[in-house]
Length: 136
Image 1 (cartoon, rainbow, N blue to C red):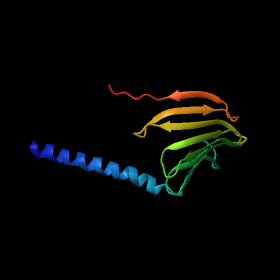
Image 2 (image 1 turned 90 degrees about the horizontal axis):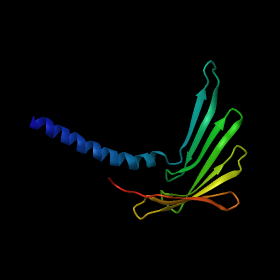
Image 3 (image 1 turned 180 degrees about the vertical axis):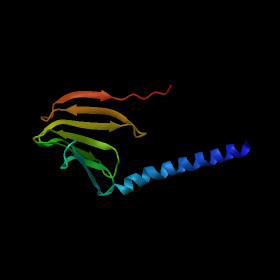
Image 4 (image 1 turned 45 degrees about the horizontal axis):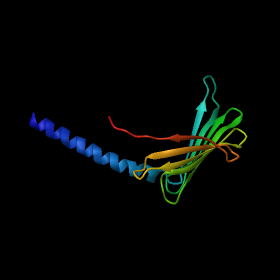
């Protein structure tokens, strides 16, 4: 019985260590990566481009484009401050590649989101979202 508990404990510790390493490794694997998603409708053999996600040299998502049968459906760009992994600004574009919303983010010292401000393309503040964290 004790042997089983020890084995279970060892596997739990190994799993925790691998998870921490994998999180850092994910960003490493995404450096300068472009991911294209293709779909094929039922009854067809012709694939069509559905989504493209682009990452920068630090492994941070910098652009995501969603496509429809007529072309670009939506595009989102992400801006970061320095080498930070926290998104500073997110700009959403419509199917004509015109900005429709600009989101700016502020973070707490522990890295959690503090405030999200949503602006119209003309720079006018549309709404503010405040994040509150509590434990049960």
